[in-house]
Amino acid sequence: MQGLRRKFFYNISVYQVGSQVASSLHESIGRSTYSTRKVFDAGQPTAATHPQLLEEGEITPGITSDEYISRRKRLLELLPEKSLAIIASAPVKMMTDVVPYTFRQDADYLYITGCQQPGGVAVLSDECGLCMFMPDPSPQEVVWQGEIAGVDAALDTFKAEKAFPIRRIREILPEMIGKASKLFHNVKTALPAYTDLEAFRMATYDGKVKDLSRFTHEARWIKSPSELKLMRQSASIACQALLQTMMFSRTSPDESMLSAKVEYECKMRGAQRMAFNPVVGGGANGSVIHYSRNDKKIRDGDLVLMDIGCELHGYLSDLTRTWPPCGSFSSAQVEMLCRGLAKLGILKDDRSSSQSYHQLNPTAIGHYLGMDVHDCSMIRNDRPLQPGVVITIEPGIYIPSSFDAPERYQGIGIRIEDEVLITESGHEVLTGSMPKEIQHIKSLLNYGNGGATELRSMRAASS
Picture 1 (cartoon, one colour):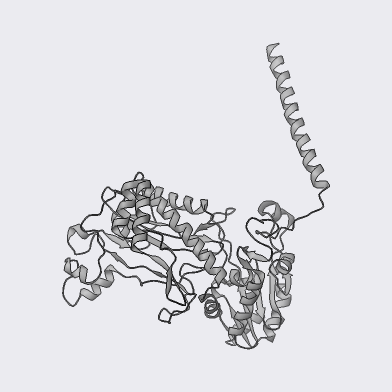
Picture 2 (cartoon, one colour; picture 1 turned 60 degrees about the vertical axis):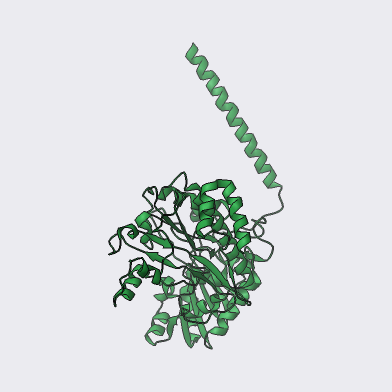
């Protein structure tokens, strides 16, 4: 009898819960039935779906459709007359059969379209303007992936002059290729959807096909005011995140924990992703320039070198600091370059010293920064800088444990990296809020919140 009673009350409870769910569902359906507003989903944030993020007329936060149109006009001005440019979106890369890696759009495709999704091909010419071939997902794909930008989004959101489903590229693109005197495409994201076309193959055979990157990188090299605003914000996020991570390192000197901490702090401040896998090199790992394992505990007294950056709406930051989580530097952990290295006995005073120096400092002094970490790689590094260009400055010294030097210097890696914007009157250090002087770092690490206050006053006095 007791068992029947329990079963009776269980059925009553299930019935009540089911009734509440059904009632809630009916109420929701009723509300949506009488709604007169249907918000168009472009497969990515728009002013209609994310008013807290974008204003009317913006495709990317802070960047309007008019700016994207002017970018396309600028690119056409750079190209030879009667050229056709083909730019494919980035491919989806898979971890396993059904699990994709996090998607990141090709910078050139994003730069001219604003479209953040895979599966499209953009074509640009004086005759047709921007023509976008867009994915045409099945209802099942929408169920699994959500809405995907198609032809309507190409015309209404991205302001293309023409748009077609990607399945029609074989019937439409060959004629466009045939009318062009020169053909350019983004070699790194080339897709069989157009490279397998007979017209494209013939153009390649005739020597008409060239890499588009040198033109897109030229257009992207100097940043607009709206781009610089996003880069300042990205740099600010990275600085705040790294500052929190430096203080956290006092109690958790572990590479993996510091990597997780800085990523958490970046994303909590609005970054979509990290610009690259954080480099967290404790001790001798700091002398490995692109160290990525981040799996060791940092010994007491060792330095940790952290190279980090984040991405905000397509624009990246990149900075590096080196500090001792224990709060104090040893006499060997100082800024050392060329003469200092020879004076300390790290470099021998002979003909091989120059070669040895490059072994200890094999990197360039910096690189361009923007939509990619090493931005606009087709622009030569010896080109005179202009206002609106952003570069990194990153002096460093990396002494492997096996290097023939006094033992106390072996295994030390030190890099200081900042972002610098070239301006009309000089320059602006976008990451200038991050401490890098020894006394500032010691103050921060040893005094907690009080140290942060002291740090601000010291920085204000020195500026």
